Image (tube, rainbow, N blue to C red; front, side):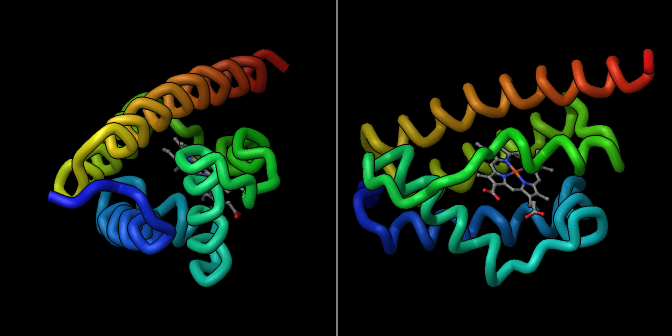
Length: 129
Ligand code: HEM
């Protein structure tokens, strides 16, 4: 199987992942809640992953911040992050091998856990206010 090493690999990975996401139980967050413009979202995600995996600093943004307003509309729960991570891990493993592929799974897991915690906390605080 192929190593994850080029920008084209990232584009393939991200495109394949979001095709799965759209068909899954978390697809509605993208299509119905945030109503994402895929022609903008996908290139942003290429840059995000290129920055994380290749140290090519092309993504500038705050990945946590964009999720709070979505979470306010529909709480993003643990089960949603589990689905996200399962699909990401599956997509990486089905297509790539090697250290960078492992890193893609590892980093996604860390960010997903942190994000899940932050969204849960925000939801709890919202309920108190
Ligand atoms: C249940 C899990 C998740 C859902 C439903 C979700 C949903 C979304 C949506 C709807 C957007 C588009 C926001 C917009 O442009 O209006 C977005 C953006 C983004 N997401 Fe997620 N996300 C999830 C998990 C993650 C995780 C685990 C990561 C990182 C590993 C991540 C990284 C990003 C990044 C980098 C952006 C673009 C931020 C920017 O605009 O700069 N997301 N997400």
